[in-house]
Image (cartoon, rainbow, N blue to C red; front, side, top):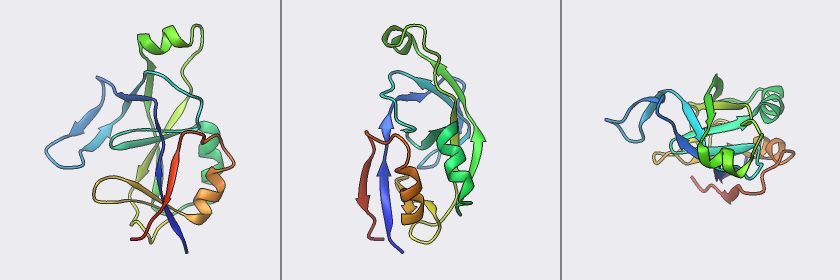
Amino acid sequence: MKYYILDPEVAGGLGSRTQMDSSVHPPIVKRLHYELESWLGDDFVQSFPCYLVTKELRAVLAAIHPTGLSFATADVSASESFKDQHPGVAPPELIWLKIHGVPGQDDFGLTADARLVVSHRVLAQMQTAQLSHCDVVDFTG
């Protein structure tokens, strides 16, 4: 099976309510607060070392029962910059992808430097969503 590295849009950063262990690399996030700065509309975003999807993309992914992945709640807020750029628009509901698989083996995995690796079947499903700002390259293992 073929695998790919995905590098989605960075639409914000880790907010002040994030709880993580930064004594290791990559840091281990225990509670995720994602603060949107700007958002170009993609269904898949990131802020090192976390990846998030819209609830619509979550439903697409959940339907194929991927390995190496569980879903978790993220605390999502809008920064002043986001509010200025998108007046009257609420931030999208984003779901945290908790990735625990082996890259090149499971449907979802993380490399040692926290790059996301997905299987061909996952990529095919994700490409049914809005991913205009997500770079995709072959994973060679």
